[in-house]
Image 1 (cartoon, helix red, strand yellow):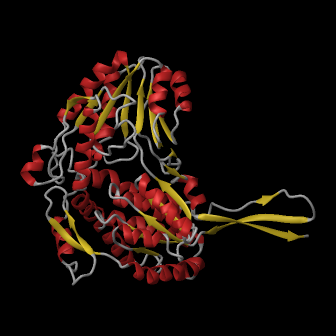
Image 2 (cartoon, rainbow, N blue to C red):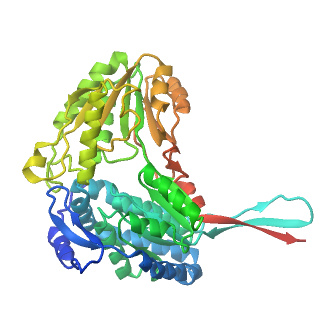
Image 3 (cartoon, rainbow, N blue to C red):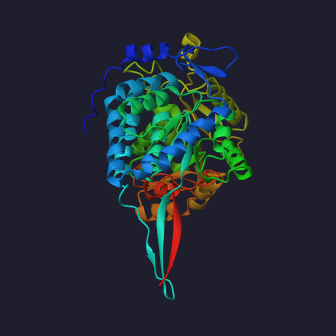
Length: 492
């Protein structure tokens, strides 16, 4: 299939919109949103004060209990499809804003993120009239049935790596099931989400107040998730922040919670793979895409000793072929890391890995562009000899860094793969499908990819085990998360 042509980024329109946003005002809390490629300020982000959340959540409550509750299921579906149309009609602008604030290439934003951001609204539009309760075979002269009801007002906290797509993953099922949504984007990447909400509001696709955005730092986020007006919290981000959210919710509103947390996924390559070059190509492509800032990426490569050296050589060759640069240059294949803190953290973890006995095959330093432009660029990096005792074995690097380990037996591979606190995703490659399936069933992860790493579909559940989260997103799992079951008894 031929890749679609890449539309020109509408930079003039984006910069005009940014220039029109208000600047700093007195001592009001806020921060400058920076361009990761040049560290130049894009615009000032004025934080919502925690006490301003009362009004936003009250509007959300009125919307979900008023006009949205009176909207037929088919009209809800039409509204969600209208949101999808808004996204498609404005995709170049939204993609450009996302690349400006996040650093991923415009090609990745436009051709990878935005199509799915729109399509997920179409997918959940199809569910509005298909989820229902059931009649239960109870004993005695009684009728018992269940109702699927909206949870109410949902606080949706979105990370900086996929600002639009992960927001859509949460918004679409929440609205489809009759809820209202208040979205809090990362303070590092709020612009594309703010613009999307403005465009949706201008389209009149949704009732006033049904979908809102609040902006701010961790303090605003904590105030949102623990607010008594919130019935449901969905968070994607780090395990540490997820734990803090659980503590806040437990002490305040006891809202239901879905958490999608850290990854550090293993990819096991057995000695009987049919085409190692193809395995390396796929492994490197999914690792280094989006500058490695993906929770499900294969971060740990556990390779049979007979294939280890050739695998490392192939990864190094792929890393050498990458071209860090301006996210809007069509020739760029790797943008800057989203934040300076993330760049510093990645380089520090590489140093820890080497100090802990790993060998550096390539990379491991700031890219020369960091010195030229100030942008937060990291060289594509390949580490090998990463043992279970290495200090970074159990740490999600979340960047363009491959950690390669060797093994001799299947049990040794499983011990390395499962010997971490995370369990979001995993993969296995083998020329023997039955053997691969046996290992897949023993891998302790919520998603396991066999012989092709990284397949996703809106109909398939997404989420991890252990410290990688609570609950699932996508498919029917999201509908369970955004509804509550009421059991009704009638005496006959």
